[in-house]
Amino acid sequence: MTTITLETPVTGKYEQPVGLFINNEFIKGKKGQEFEVINPTNEKVICKVHEALEEDVDIAVAAARKAFASGSEYRTMSTARRGKLLLDLADLFEKNIDTLAAIESLDNGKSITMAKGDVGACIGCLRYYGGWADKIHGKVITTAEGTFAYTKREAVGVCGQIIPWNFPLLMWAWKIGPAIACGCTVVLKTAEQTPLSGLYAAKLCKEAGFPPGVVNVISGFGKTAGAAIANHMDIDKVAFTGSTLVGRSILKASASSNLKKVTLELGGKSPNIVFEDADIDEAISWVNFGIFYNHGQCCCAGSRIYVQESIYDEFVKKFKERAQKNVVGDPFHKDTFQGPQVSQLQYDRIMDYIKIGKDEGATIETGGERHGDVGYFIQPTIFSNVNHDMKIMQEEIFGPVCAIAKFKDIDDVLNIGNDSTYGLAAAVHTKNLNTAIKVSDGLKAGTVWVNQYNMLHWSLPFGGFRQSGIGRELGKAALENYTQIKTVSINMKGALF
Ligand code: NAI
Ligand code: MG
Image (cartoon, rainbow, N blue to C red):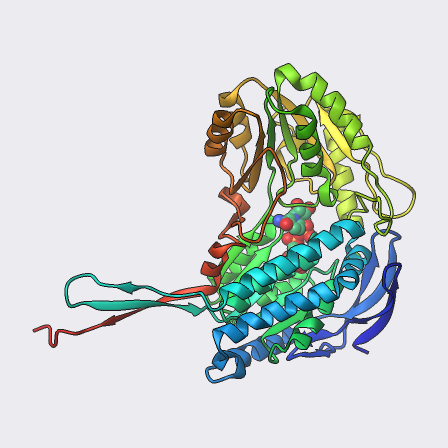
């Protein structure tokens, strides 16, 4: 069976595809393997999905290659029609918002309110790139009188896309939106922890009229299906979001296979900086959202919190009170802010970091323990008295755990804020415009928020400085990853000699 009946508190019974989505059909893997999908709220098996191995990746790539072939239905459709595919897909996301959000809450554990927010952001992203499809142009360039050349932005080709489990649907939309706008075809591998929403969204691609093979969505593991994508000789580009460790292996795989183009969106340890002149209650609200949103499972989580020394004590006291009010529990309850971590493995990794923080001598202001008896829940955790060199200040924890330290002035906070191998995001809270701009200029980060946090938007480029990544997603910038420039230079002067 490649579709099964599942149930959620929001949708009641619904039909969930569980096959590999290749050529607009849900099919079984060649070897017939399946793997279990776990509900992180109760640790129970939701269902099994079909698993892609290397030979299935080959089949998906062949489908994507065929759909990309010159003269295919996809290649010959107008750019406006291609954009309309994304617009129609966005409409279907809108029509199915409750189901998509419920699947996300079921499989990932994020609260239904946040999951709806994610689907809303998917809709925005798909519409944004739908709008771009017929506006991707080249240039005319003259280098001297009588010369004439033009550039075209041509689709890169077959794209492998490997996405993580923290925003299963949103990462799907961030990857598929610009790829289709540019005329590429796609083999997307979802994360093994959260395959369900991506398959449901694949079904909507078919409904929206995508020709077969344009979007292929497969479930599978990193070391098998993921590595097969990264090493594939007939994939022209890989877009990856996930850990820095795996990001490195993707680059290596490109180097040792066909030099496919690679964009990486990796980890972070982002500084969130609060100056003494900030509105302290607003700042606390953003700092709380900065670290605890999505259970701390955000690449851009504001996990290093630097507070100017004069307001440090007051800040810590109020922040602690604020964090204790975050409602942790059943993702399907309307008041829940924080659900479970995505998996036992992530739960264990985070609890290890909490132990390391304690052993290193930092102080737990609040949290530090599991929440409840069942499910991968962890209390919102704040460490104070954290030295710059401690692991909990240096390494990405990817959970509801943050470290707070004091700073003296702008120079001091820029020094410690920038002392990281990462550079994904940062924030500064202040009422002083000069401070905001000076600190934003000084921070080595791909995104700097002023008096807010986590406020991503599809029209704003997002990506990392330093080891947080290569390339940008979202905005017009993402179109560069899915097109390559062809220069056509025309002779109008006859023979050279
Ligand atoms: P991961 O990097 O192993 O997984 C992300 C994706 O990469 C998944 O689809 C996975 O199947 C795939 N993958 C894994 N190994 C691969 C390989 N050798 N070749 C190709 N694809 C491969 O991340 P994981 O283990 O789920 O989480 C570990 C840590 O990574 C987290 O604690 C967090 O620090 C970081 N992370 C960062 C994310 C981000 O948004 N930047 C998202 C998820 C994890
Ligand atoms: Mg799951």
